[in-house]
Length: 117
Image 1 (tube, rainbow, N blue to C red):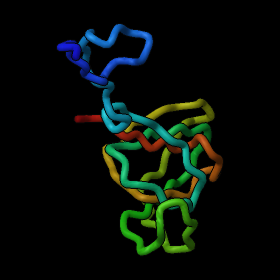
Image 2: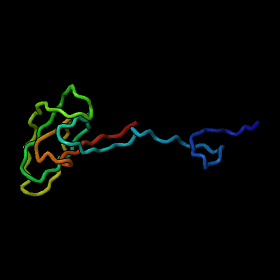
Image 3: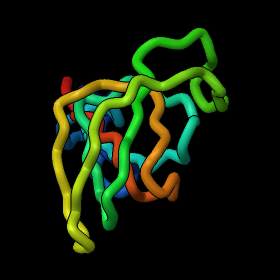
Image 4: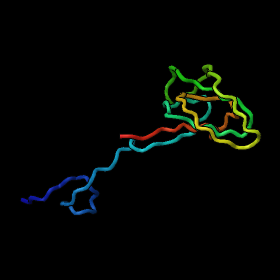
C-alpha cells in the first residue's frame, strides 16, 4: 500500500503525489453579451451603450417572461443619446433585463456581468 497523497485536483499528466489548486469555477470570471432587442436577459451589473446616431434607447426592468424569450412589453424610455454622427461608447450603471430602440441592431447594447467567488 502506498502512502502517496492523491489530491485529484491536477490533470492526469502530473505525478499523482503532486498537489495543486483546484480550477476556478466558471462563475469566477465575468462575461459580456450583446443581446438582440426585446430579448430577456439575466440582470447585468451594468451596460455599455454603443451608438452611432441620435436615438432613444428604452429599457425593461421587470418582466414575467423567461430568460432568452422575447417580449412585447412596454419598455421605459431611458436615454436619448446624441452621438453627432460619430460612434460613442457610454457605460450606464443600470440593470435592465431587456432593451429596444436605437437602431435595434445587435451590438448597440452590451450587458456586462462581473465575476466573483
